[in-house]
Amino acid sequence: MGKQQRYSCTACGATHSKWSGRCEACGAWNAIVEEAPLSAGPASKGLGGARGARVALSDLASAEAPPPRTVSGLAEFDRVLGGGLVDGSAILVGGDPGIGKSTLLLQAAAKLAQAGLPTVYVSGEEAAAQIRMRARRLGLGAAPVRLAAETNLRDILTTLDAERPRLAIIDSIQTMWLDTVESAPGSVAQVRAAAHELTTFAKRRGISVIMVGHVTKDGQIAGPRVVEHMVDTVLYFEGERGHQFRILRAVKNRFGPADEIGVFEMTGDGLTEVANPSALFLSGRETPTPGSVVFAGIEGTRPVLCEIQALVAPTPHAQPRRSAVGLDGGRLAMILAVLEARCGVPFTGLDVYLNVAGGLRVTEPAADLAVAAALLSAREDTELPLDTVVFGEISLSGAVRPVGQTETRLKEARKLGFARAILPEGSKTGASDGEPVQAIPDLPTLAGDIFGAG
Ligand code: TYD
Ligand code: MG
Image 1 (cartoon, rainbow, N blue to C red):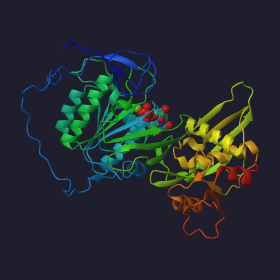
Image 2 (image 1 turned 120 degrees about the vertical axis):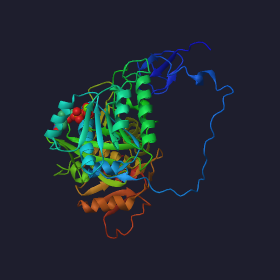
Image 3 (image 1 turned 120 degrees about the horizontal axis):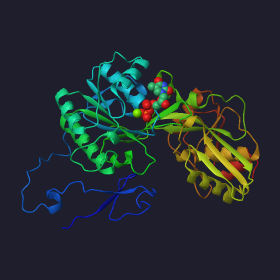
Image 4 (image 1 turned 45 degrees about the horizontal axis):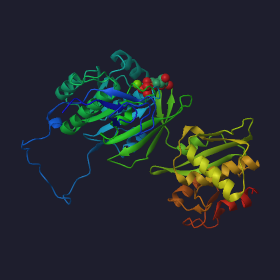
């Protein structure tokens, strides 16, 4: 068999037989690079007649104890992991550079070490002195975390094998390199091989490994998506650089619910936990404002109330602007189209800006009705009472559909002093007799009865 050229996408890791400017798998531009084949081992020659060893098989019904976990005491971090760190698990923490990944993991490492879990922190980006300085600044100078500044993965694994910690933090996977792989550190081949070594090491030795992965803009460096499929748990640390709020989100978790979020605030003394995110996302609302609507959402296992803001203004441009921060742009386009087609409320010639306050990113379809209400409120210059929450899914026909966990949403709203709710007809509201709940069957009812539009 002749030597085959391989090209892979540094954004998503897809492999291609030839180079092209745009990755067909994920759509990223200028992300495809040539790479040396991972190995020219026996696999490429086929297994031939060699006999493998017999693999032990077990029953589906065998009883399994829940995996042992260590609780760090950093409650928002433990929650996102599904109730603590599972022994021997491989975890990826992705996020933009400078968002606070190293800070978060140093704090988590210190907490876990203080809770009795022998912990090693390996940095390929900073000198040990720098990390020590940060730890001191965070008031964690005395935590029994063992430090190393190293990028040679062979040496790191040898050290971990001798040291036998229970947790190893690798910051970051893009700086690690294996001498068995020819490409440069940060390349798809290196990142993938390094993550594979670390993941199998974690399983074999029962040592938990947390890898940091920078989200990259530059196509030459592989991003965290390249290793997502290898690890047990994928967390993303999100937030606006100018904002102090940070959200740790589980996008994949073999040991807990995905979509769980933990909320933190970046302060001068590191990250502090935000126990009541609803109160935080709603702070600063004193007077009713057109375009401002409170959405009663669910993030993971917990209800989170947040403010959705819309601004609608005549456009000076030939092509009106549609801008959404914290919400999918396609979802906004769909809601605008339904408002136009089913309610006779046109947005032609109008710029539309939508924003989820506090830097939260909302992905639930249940937010549709709140988004529509914010758009109508802004367009008609009519505000909703301050103590109103809104939720419900909109279908293309203009119908408003019930969503899950109605009672959980209402309970959180009541707890925070919201007395009214606009929600889909047919929602199971439980024991909310006498509560001013407005159940609506479709979008034209919202537009006409509540905002006098259409
Ligand atoms: P860092 O954890 O280094 O980010 P990452 O590892 O994701 O690249 O944090 C970077 C930013 O956080 C840095 O710009 C300064 C800020 N920061 C604080 O505001 N307070 C603090 O206590 C610390 C340690 C960092
Ligand atoms: Mg860092």
